[in-house]
Image 1 (cartoon, rainbow, N blue to C red):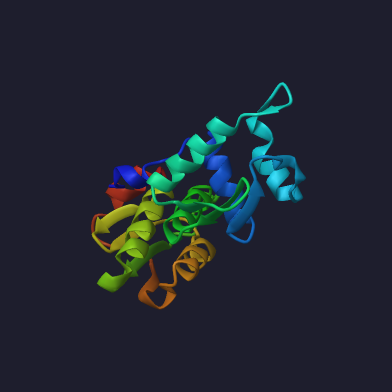
Image 2 (tube, rainbow, N blue to C red):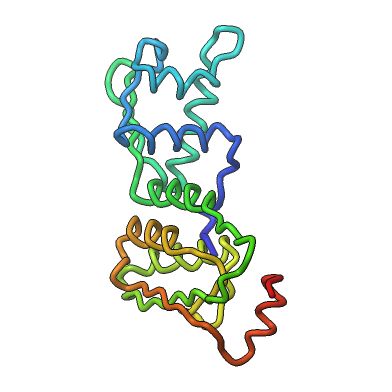
Length: 195
């Protein structure tokens, strides 16, 4: 379970948009809260939702920045003359990766090829966060959990597993096996609605 500090951001929220723009760019933004529209295109895109009747809502913008900082998703510093620096943290990058992973879905085949894909992993404890993210995403992709580090699906998933585990830097610790049949598979055929 995610701690309150890194609980989900609503996708249509301005805090989510702020974090997304930081993740899309270099990860660091420096902007003037006195003349915010004088910055680069990414800055203009980032803050345009904070304008109401052509007036920049500075307090609302700073509230959202401080909210993200409280969750440890960004670092925020006030420099001289109304200039602020916002930097995405490692935790913030992981959060945005997690949102990206959530968009990955497995495509069921029109006709099942009668091969089960068994995902096994043994990820060291120092990479616990990556291990948790992998488990979370396997569940989001509707894999069936057989054991704590063993998941199963009847659908092709090699590219998705390769992408997720490579990004999380755990590819060498994840194995995909192909199984043609096993004891108790009828129950799982029913679960996945396949014949």
